Length: 488
Image 1 (cartoon, rainbow, N blue to C red):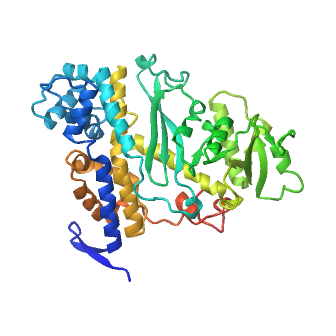
Image 2: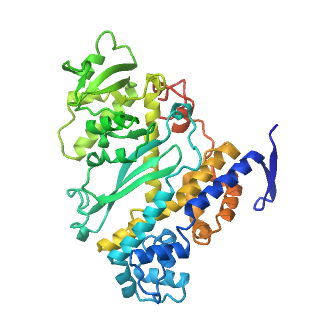
Image 3: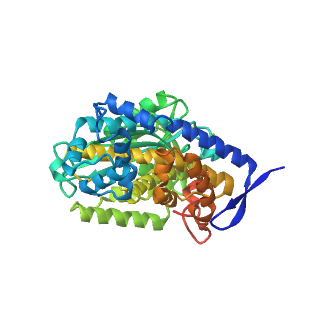
């Protein structure tokens, strides 16, 4: 027998029923979040960090440790491109005794000590976020993995005067840029690693970095930018798992000591040309890494669209038209993995890979809602203070979002809209209330009431990527046709 408790919704002046078991779990999760943040954002904890980094050296300092972190996080969320004069106004609102000129505030921001302080608080917060709150992705296809790690990077253009410190790609791209590399555990909705570097740092150069963070039983899902054979071997040595698309230029061997095969010719042989899904036991690259190789013969409409985009991209970049060989390659999607066939049938591997788009959505939210790309200034120290402050705000929001996602699913059988949640947190000073005023309980209770009336996604006919994974929809059935309504 399931017990329910009735909670009054003061906005709608009505009540709603929530399972008693859900209330108990909610309180447990709230306590976990509080324990994560305890000591990080108290005046005492921040003062200790500020003194260790020498950001504050005198007790008479006008700018207090708490005020500066709040200025770099929640205050800049309200107005990301605020001027230094505006920051002075905000600072005085936080602390009436902190009356400083724009020049004086700039002098404090543009120091190595300020960078060290904000970066240290960010690193402490990242460490606090490592332990998962609740399992957010209970899909059977992913239940065998301890964590499901997505990795990708996003670039932020900077003022060209910063090209010496943050060199960009040049050409049609910015002369100055920074790149943020992000490893996210999508199963538990927690950050594992965030690294800030120059815009010219390639994803391939970071391909093996994730190995230091791996635990036995982890699953790593990344795009072709991180495709490095040696890194795949190291993931396997860690008794972890990977899922990746296959890079076209990589040689494929059906026998460890055999000759490389032309993959397109091979799958178009009389014995296989009728198959939509092809699975091979293969070895790839000069390292002859053993893999499961799965190929999908794509629908004509998808192939034509891919080829159209390839020709359009070549024309835009003033390159030669795509070769016939490349156009033939676009008729397929090829994936490699070391996950056993008993866990993942070949038919669903492409569906699981759709999970990688979650990190693209995260970057979109960072830019559209949290303005991670709005970094005004011409001094390296200022840019680093701003970017670490913005990333710190993201880490503050993350455990609240993880709790909200769990509540939406467990209490209301709905999917959370992270877009709506972030806007809700930004309104009414809720982030300040939860983090700096240590009133997380009140914010989470308000969140529980707000979820069913406006923070969940609207029901739709098409399945989301998560729903397709949970329902184990075969990849080739995920494309729309006259008999289906699932998303591409």
